[in-house]
Structures are given as C-alpha cells and as structure tokens.
Image (cartoon, rainbow, N blue to C red; front, side):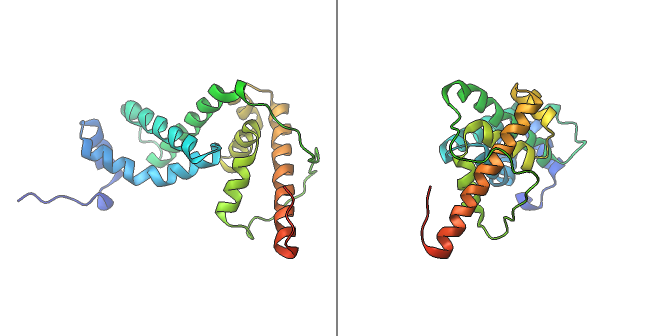
Length: 193
C-alpha cells in the first residue's frame, strides 16, 4: 500500500514539481492551498463576488499556464498574488470604458488626515471599498493594500502619476465619509448614504 502525504504537509516545492509534471492532484492541492487568500485579494478589486470569482479563475489559469516560469526566488504566494492583481487590472481595463466615475459630495483633499480602521469589521470595509468607482477602487487597493507607488500605478493603469494621487485622495475621502456615516449610525441610529 502506497503512503500518500497529506496536502497540508507537502512543501511548496513538492506541489510545484507535481504541477510541472502534469499532476491534476497537485494542481488541485495548489489551488486549495491558495484559493482562499487569493479570493480575498480579488474581492478587494472587484465590485461583486461574481466578478471576483471571474478574476480568481482567470488568475489561476494564468498561474497554471506560467508555473514553469516561476523562478522560486520568492514565496509562491507572492508570485500568485501578483498574478491575481494583474488579472484584476486586466478585468478593470476591459470594463473601464463602460463605467463613469461619479463625483459625489466628497472633499477633494484629506491633507494628511489619518483614520483608524480597527473599529470596523473586514466585511464592512470590503463592502465600502467595493462601492468605490472602479478606478478609485483599483488605485486605492494598489497603493494602500499592495504597496505600489503612484508612478507604478500610473504605468499599470495607463494614467498619469498625478491622476493616481488624485484618485487615491478621492477614494480615501469617500471611504472616510462612509466611515463617518457608519459611526453616526452606530451612535444615534441614523445612516445617510
């Protein structure tokens, strides 16, 4: 009887090597190991769960098609995360002409103001980020979550560095306003969208 190593105790290298050898089981293990974390990444960029699932699927297709190019110079999770972000950017580019950015009643600048997020549940924050206009959502995620600089964001999205900075400031202002409204609702029961 052959002893099978449980997926949770397999090394990253074993899973990669199995995938490269064409093992469907190893592909399944790789998917199961990273799908949850990558879905969280995709949800931040997508407006809906359905859209996030599309990005996740496209991302994993890219992972499997390009795994032979993974040089093992960084953890596999970082490489996959980058692929998911790029899949989200491609999705955004495909949909960008269809969506207008709404201006709303939000202040232009936050001039260095900071706000604390520790009082909010992940689901509340995710919902607020998903409500942002697509360009604002992309710039906010790339800068605040992924750590890209505005120049790099501009190159990725085909916009100027100044536009990236402006859209990030607007996204922050919108989120700050939404958080203030949520706080007001929590304290006195009135919520204004």
